Length: 211
Image 1 (tube, rainbow, N blue to C red):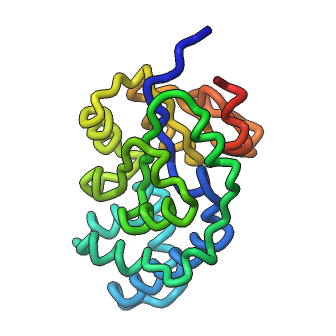
Image 2 (image 1 turned 180 degrees about the vertical axis):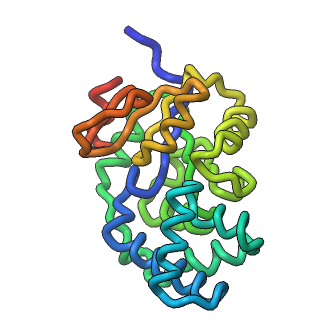
């Protein structure tokens, strides 16, 4: 039998829970309003800027830092402060059962801020299931798909890339992981599988079939 990986590295949003249903629309609106106020533009232009930076850099935050010198902590607090977060979380408790049974270390690596990630883990009851949690602050505001954040995680956790599996809903982030030698699992219902993806599954709950 093949030995289990030393570590499973999981994304958070739209990987372990469904953020697109309620949470992402709220955060996107908060980002739009932030950009409107920051740059004195209308809603349509703010949305265009938000999406442009997200596609170009993997995170709206990074574009705003590079082009408008914003305070990242102020931005993250303003855009990820969700008063009714508990009511917005769409989570299948079966994910906790899966994580408990999965062999090897489990690490969370999210582009979200620490206060948001901690809240999601607490609401879903997953806090104690992870050996370590890395957020955008942990990567020194170099979010996925930046290689710098991946390298920092691997260095701090003393992990060998080829003994790790990255589980993620973003193909671009997995491409970066693959460049460093990690095995990659893409959570997606797309029929096409990029060459840097080792396994494509429709849901995190399908993960045990690849053990």
